[in-house]
Amino acid sequence: MKEKLKNILSVPTYTWEEDQLISYVTNILEEKGYPYYLDSLGSIYITKGKSEHYPCLVAHLDSVHQIKEYEVVEWVRFTLLRVNPNIIHVW
Image (tube, rainbow, N blue to C red):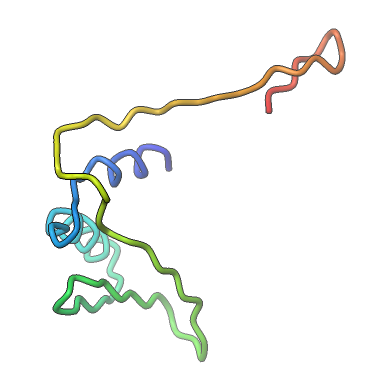
């Protein structure tokens, strides 16, 4: 799951310049066989399964910074708390 997140975050976007990410996401949807609708503004509408009611998930495909070369790296911050001298709990 972390690799999928890194991959999607690595696709460069900017407002009105989301074509690469739209293509990335719709390719995944097609591979999985999920029906979707792409409107003229680049919004992707996805429905999975059959139901009377569906939950709604909304996310932006664009970024606030100009498109540039960058690398997505995993950074983990944790705190060590010694509760028992023989066990270190990582939070």
